[in-house]
Image (cartoon, rainbow over all chains, first blue to last red; front, side):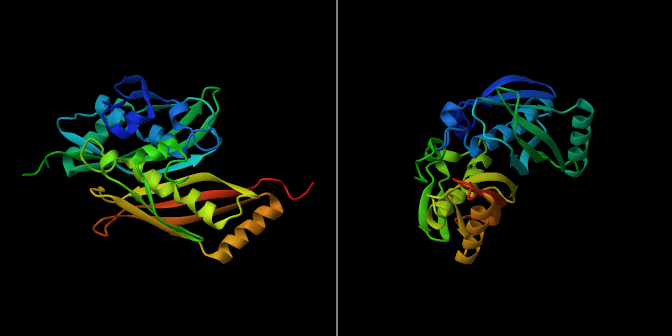
Length: 142
Length: 142
């Protein structure tokens, strides 16, 4: 679902390297995402930083009761990304429970995390603050 | 060059509606960029907000002496984008001259602008603060 569920993401060739409750690691390949100077286009780096929102949602939240929205992102590009690039995001289960409880009570809950995008040499090429909102499918109050 | 020079951008189907010194208007079509809930994927909106950086560079700065980098972007998603979406960016010639003068003197100059992404009904679906840097191809001091 993460690799091809959104055609836009599918066209980037992004790969899920690990995906489990509270943890996801994704890889964006360089070649389909080259810019005009031979490094990774900023839009592919944004996409790599954004997709963990969906992946963490799928493994960590109750998809029968909630859905996620992206509220915003502040992304800083630190170095050109000249290799395949990875991102890891962790969300601990206590924090996930807290977010779901708020969304259950008031219909929505904002949450965010910082993530680093890392090239094949271990260099951090970008950092992002990703802001999401969990929405309750049905409000708890009738 | 803007529509297809970067394969990633080409795959989105983005179109240049206007492009002249100090002004650019681009359109991101909905259909190739749908997410899993039938609105425009955030990565396509990011790309629409980012590409004016290259377009304004090409029309407004001296490409024989400078090149641009994206330093970062803070993008806020306000409403789902359920139609083709456009962006307009203006950079007045005095400000452009000032930026080029700084880059010429010290080798680089940061600049930024705010832009709005607007759907076909005139609704602003996202706002972005886009941060770029103009770099001199050859440092002025030997």
